[in-house]
Length: 126
Image (tube, rainbow, N blue to C red):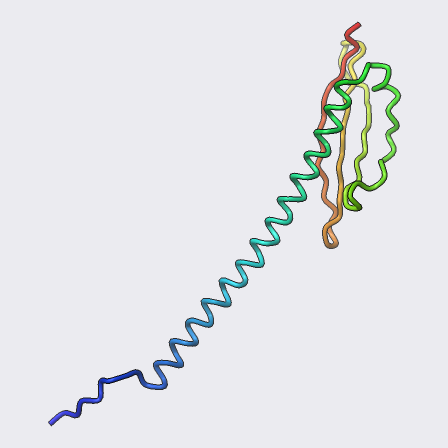
């Protein structure tokens, strides 16, 4: 006559289940850290792009002579993170009075330096 001993889990089954659960939770924790780093990097890129766009829009409202007088040296750090530099170059075209304006926003995150660069063309309308 068979014995009925089906009323619970054995200790080995509980340990195996706990091990599988622990491995799954550790994998989720690793994904969480990666997602947080990605969000931080995306946020800094968004802020840097906004700072570059702000400078480009300011330049578009300037007179042509003011654009020619822009100092190409970098500005002081913005929010103690970003450095914005603006340069004005001649375009290699036969059309006179065209200038290419480049706005570069750079920052260091960890031990890596990143940058966002926007360009626009300014003309002497008069």
